[in-house]
Every structure is written in structure tokens, then in C-alpha cells.
Image (cartoon, rainbow, N blue to C red; front, side, top):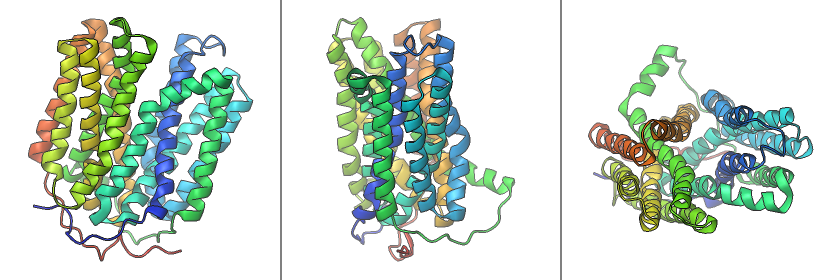
Length: 407
């Protein structure tokens, strides 16, 4: 059964393209700056404890604020939240470039996380509403590709900027990137109308979040992001221990990024054409991730590290756009922001929880055992999603995605 209508309408690329840049900005800001700070702890006077706390501030802000700003975008409109969040990100990044004391770095890092918490879920909501259910796969395929690219190559770009000009260069680059995204979004993103909503209680929210149409795709997103976080951090580390040079070890991340970035738009288009569906193919993506992780756990070798990166990248590239498109197709437009904000919270939990799980098990046992545990968790999530997920209703191109945006 197709999840989308056979009727195709043109994808409004001009309106959505600034949101792709916004997705790249938040991912690059999270991972690029984290990697750079890790090499500069002595220069800026950070202890390991302070360094850990500084890294956690970005994620802490996102975990707390993403659902809040997602709901706010339903109340006041997605465009003000997107533009305001990007502008705030640019300002606090510039602050980090000018004031480099540890306390001010903490303020900048917290501010970046708070700003990203605003424009990230609002951007996901805007992608869903502008594209509409019938084009959700293509839109989220491209959006996810740019976001995955930011997650995966952020450390590489951060390292390059660090060599060129230190932390100041990295903060300035983030400020320029966010400023460009702000201007582009202000000009190109349509003013989507605020839709009437029914008043809801905490109990209503709990029921909405417990339904399989939300819970299962969010679990898929959390599992895929957990694997991404582990792969970006631990595969280069494993490569180094196996005798690969720095360039070859970091090349693993490049393979993962290219695989994920290349496959997501294709998967989204196939979903919109009705040739694949979320129920079968999102679990298949997670299985590919689990196989890749298990491969390198069972037989650590330079060849298997690259094979694992390829499988993980392809698996993430299949699962991510399908999960987001399913959420977009099953969520009423009037609460799209709240749903996307809470789903993004699931991704943040996976992003933080995956490396923590692997690190904790590696300390207690070994890294191969830890990777095996991650593979088992990922495969378990795939099994649950294959049995619990139901097809999304057929998309009606006459409804929003929606109503026509106001310009």
C-alpha cells in the first residue's frame, strides 16, 4: 500500500532550500565546535570536567527547549521562530569569537544550543507544511541529507578552521553561516498561516506521544542518530588503534557522510512515488546500521571499518527521511511544530545516549562488546518498528502541506 498519493506536485525548492542550510548550521554547530573544543582545552584553561560540562550545555539546551519552541511555532508561526533562532545563533556565535574566556564560551555554547532549539524543530515543521504529505519524502530526504552532512563532516570542517585561525575562526564561520541562513530564510520562506488548534491538556499530550505513529518513527530517529554519534566518534578512534593514519581514520567519517547524503534524497523520492514504504524500509535501514556496527565489532580491521561506515551511512540515509516523512504524514498541520520538536528531542537522546552507552560498556568490557550491544539495540528497534508501525494515510495534495502559504 502506498503511503503517498500518486499525484505529484512540484517540490517548492525555493521556499525549502533555506531550511536545508538551517539544518546544516545546527548540525555543524553541534559537532564541529565540539570536536574543536576537544583540541583546545589547555589553551582556554578548561579541566576535563569543565570541558565535559561545556559540551553538554548545547545538548542540554536542545533537550529542554526543542519541544517548547516547537509548540511555540504552532502558536505564532514557523517563520518568526526560524528567523529569530538563526539570528540569535549568529549573535551568540559572534560573542564566542570575541570573548574567549571559559565562562563566556559556556554562555556562547548555551546560547547556540538554545537558538538551535528554536530554528531546528520549526524548520522541520516548515518543511512538512510547505512540501505537504505527498512530497514529504523528497523534502525530508534533502533536508536530512544536509543535516547528516553537518553532523558527519562538522568535525572535519571544525579542525580545518581551527588550523586556520583557532576557535575565533570557527565561531566567526558559524556566525557568517547563520547570518546568511537568516537573510535567506527571511526572504524565501513563506509566511505559513497559524492554524486553529483545539486546547489540549497534559493528558492529551501524553496520549498523542504514546501512539505508534509518533513513538515508532521517533525511536527509529533516536536509534539512527545514536549510531551516527558512535560512528563519528568511535570508528576513527578504532582506525587509529589499528594503525591507520589520521587522514585515513577521518576518511571513515567522509565515507559515512557521503553515503548518507547521497541516499536520502533518492529514498525520499521513492517513498513519494509509492515504490517503498516506511514500515518495511525504515527497519531495513536500521538492520543495515546494525550489520555495519556488528561487522566492525566482530572483525575489527581497516577494511571492515570502511565497510561499516558505508553500511551505517546507507542505513541512516534510508531510515531518517522515511521516519520524518511518516511523522509529517500522520501529524495534523496545526500541531506539526510540537510533534517535530518532540521528535527532535528523541534524536538528541539518541545522539547523547549512543556514545554514552558504548563508552560505558567499553569501560566495563571492551569496545567490540560495546559495539555489539549497540548493534543489538539497533536491531531490536528495527524489529519493533517493523511490527508496530502502521501505514500512513494516503496524502491528499489539496490539503496543506497545505493550504497555500501567505506571502
